[in-house]
Image 1 (cartoon, helix red, strand yellow):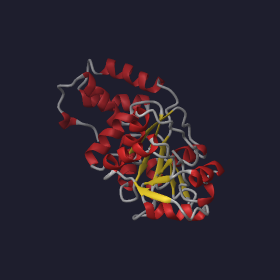
Image 2 (cartoon, one colour):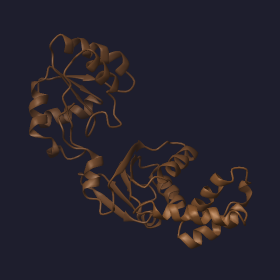
Image 3 (cartoon, one colour):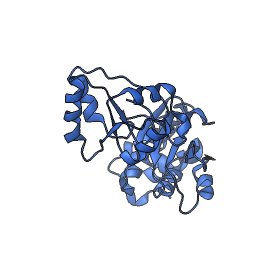
Length: 274
């Protein structure tokens, strides 16, 4: 499993170069992109085999047979560390099952690269890959993950990044850092509240994004809000209790109302606070 650069070709490790030059075959997500890297390291006579999400079920057994026969295979993705939101999992599992030695060749990863320059609290963190593409599913997933105190790390495509940040602006006051085009010519970082980042983002942004939502300081605010709400909801309607809890504890009305509905699941959503 050989990590490749996420943008700058100079980021491939010497060990990665040595391994790619020694193996019998390189299994690559996109052979056209991979040939650029192979030419960059001066490896001009190399078998490059296509392995992607549409053919990996068919190609993986063929590669495992070659591995069992004694050949060496390197798996690479288009960019970064293999299997982090990239094809190759069936090959990995089948190689293990066949008793083949599987070795990681560490290197670049957009996730760890972004975390290494993030000025926001980001330990511990939860990495969730790409968000769901459908708006309702994306919002529900974010709401579920933001209920946890750890930092949230995800990837997002350029045509969906504004919608994702708009969802975050609705759901949380926690700050974000966005990394765009990392290690490339137009490398850019944005840091601040969701609304401030929306003001900075282009209407039609380019490049894949890594998004880090800062970790909560601790659970004390959630605990305090839950306690205040438990007292108020005995005397008030859920929406009224949520509004007062939000004012007292400094949390968003929607978050307070979500807590209120957990305590009164039969309450009508027609009175939800803005």
